[in-house]
Image (cartoon, rainbow, N blue to C red; front, side, top):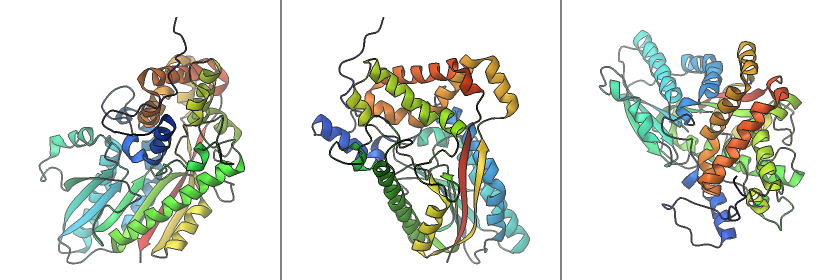
Length: 401
């Protein structure tokens, strides 16, 4: 039988990243340096993002008519030898490839129908340096010949909360399912001396007002930086298209998950509960839990609109709040027949997004224990299977003025 580890509270950062701090200093550095350790799970395993991106694919499909409208209404750039497109926060897998191909095909049709000259197309896939670009570009290998894949490809590693491209270079930018991830965990939520210390949980749902305010402030600063950088990089008349997890209008920031069923079943809720159980049983140290926070924040429609107004360089053409159901009624009935498979599927899905971050904090063995407990909770609680979880989405189409 396993026994609770006594050293799990020590932060384990991969050896390629050197930190010369005390344990507490390491934890603080980890919170400030998400760009070094945060990425979607790479590779082609059962827990890879490439094999667990169906929910994000459904979100993209839901927003695609709005993307089509944005492309149909944007101005065409006369005299340009090439049209430059960027996907910011591309991750890996077919979602980003299919989105870029959709954009290129839609623009090409417009140029063929409306212009005598059809430009070449450049596509830049951008994400943090820790992203698995190798797996992403292997998807393009069968059609690396530009005559078969009619656009040129580049990788641009870096945070979209900073500059990535030269001034006025881009004509169309998309960022899909990424902007709810923050650039850093607010320091206040990790400090015992702060009124915003998020003791006893790994996310902000259910936290005190100071914790929520710290997250909201960080989210505001991040979106301001994002829009300022895109203001510099997108040519006048270019399109910025955003899809992010979010909240509807007039929903307060402490209510990140909208309704009780969604809150009960949301993966962030279950991972919080799994972590708490392992702490109570002695498998993980309490301090280890308290020094970890999920760097995610669902902005409201008003928060997004306010950031655009502050930037002053974009005209919002469309902004909508959409609700994405977790899965169909038919699929829910299938899961009820096989709850063990359901638990495994949910665990794989969450590992695809959070495993690299949690493993950087805990190490490999405790991370396995945590996700095993997560899987068990989904598999054994039949009440969860009978609940319906919705994901709120904000979709924005804007023109660079």
